[in-house]
Length: 252
Image (cartoon, rainbow, N blue to C red; front, side, top):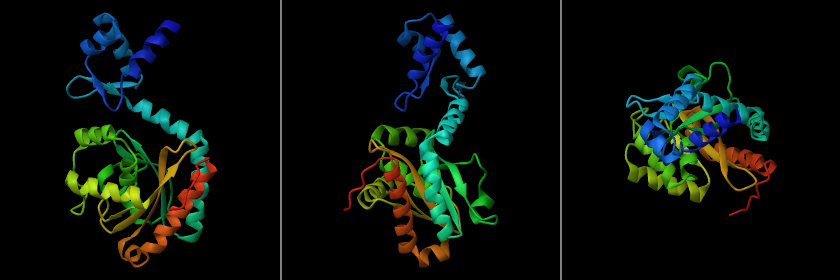
């Protein structure tokens, strides 16, 4: 039993943002195992959702890993503290507030507060993932990520637009990401959902790592009229969450 667990750990550790997919022969060579042993373990992990095969018959991390990561998020201080920030915004604005995380190169909203008939609810499902370059939360996530993460996202998802307003080239995106780091927030103007404007700000943990983002999503006409107010509110709430997670906030 311990041997199987150890082999499983060795195999799963090879799946990174830099090397997100592997063939059986490649895994066997790196791990120093026989092809049959490697195939048997990969097949077993696929059966329980820890790995999956793509269209090229190569192995990738499975959706069960993502589900487990969401369990960790849901039971962690991050979600508890973020919820406080979200509720603070909800009391002030009767709009959609989202907790975004980067998962598989796309944005997953792990928590949400929204009025029943909010526009965001009409175009999304609980497990829907958004292209990172199209939405404010994704721009924040990418702005504080490494070049390797950017390369992975571009390689896996490219610049598929979600609306005609979506960014569709790397030069424009990289310029905007640079601005996000300088200013500490990101906007999107109907880039992910027509009729919707968003502003997002990063949440940092005690180590200074960006772990999530807070987003306020509002009908575009209202959003454009009060952009500065919404931006200040989201940044303030995100900073409060970061402080509660042990991050030291330095004023610019």
